[in-house]
Length: 506
Ligand code: SF4
Image 1 (cartoon, helix red, strand yellow):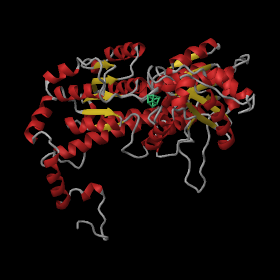
Image 2: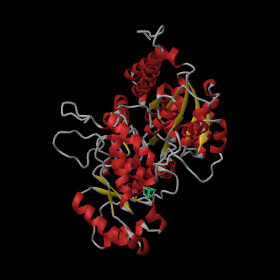
Image 3: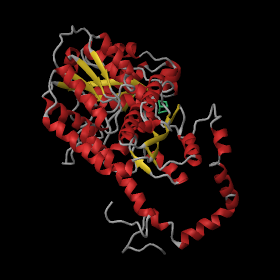
Image 4: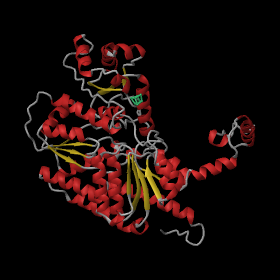
């Protein structure tokens, strides 16, 4: 027996033992699998130019898309408001998936409920589910607000959220004055970032209804669908506090996805309060830090009379400069010397490491704003993005990214593949390899297939722990991104130089 109580083997080691290897080899006799040579030949063919051309002719089949469905984004947005319970009207399997998705990324609890529509609701509509669901959620989990979104089942049968919520109130499920912001979030339109946008707009529509705007000197900031919200939101708050700016973070899940382990489970923690959300209508301007992710909300905020400053992931020197200078312009507050020093330190770090970054080529995938921020940073440090895949691309993003690439000599070789998936990216990386790949954990299969090392920046990060606790925005965040990239460059260099150039000083 390979197991011993002195050194228990988990599955990673156990199945390498001779007994298991022998067992699996004998099992093969019943599998009728193609022979090893045929597998090798087919694998090599899938990495050829011929296969790449066939692959890019796909019209109906999607393989490994780098996007999720709308309600996932709605749940993240709702989680950022104080005492707010995300409630997804529709079938419950979706909610199990949304919660486990966030659990695995943040390694934290993720609270969200469903009203569990089943076959009868698909025929007669889900009104009874809403009436009972809201009553139960309100009584059991004692939220301050319930934010309703929809699964695709509820969308296909055309359930009317506004009417259902009003009926639930009339039937006494929840008090008449209790806030139930809602958004239709059909999964067959857009992606998780569209759902985030719809929910944020729904939230502000509810909070700002019936108010007259009295302009103040405060600003609102929204981070969009951000897997780094824990580290990033804290960094944004730190920088704005250093500037002495009066601000409100619209949707702030940085506490609820980072509660302490001190013996008490916190279902709700932190977040934008109802009062702050209501008062946010008076702000002078709203900063959307992932503007492609929140375009509809931006339009809504403009109609309320506010200026909207749309940015796209302030990663690195140029993008952070733009953010802080815009904040300074809008509020009249100068950028303090302490932040200027942080900037100088990031510039210093880039200059120290520039020789290792210059000319390195990168494949990238992710959400539009994430990719825009990363490309902007790569160009800034003299690296060369090459294959850029954005499954949930938009026309505005395509135009903006192409303009960004054209403005830099380091962007000349880059090409955006809008609407493509990770199986497309596999063909690109197999036929025209790059030095590195940047993306979420899903990129590890590309790394294994093509040998191109993966730098994990994106959402979701399932197979590494705690990255989300550290910012990627601001000068400090830029430093983190720089170190992530450099660490991988140096690891690969050390692996590849066993003899003469295995230097202790790099
Ligand atoms: S695609 Fe539809 S069924 Fe699947 S998780 Fe999203 S809402 Fe649920």
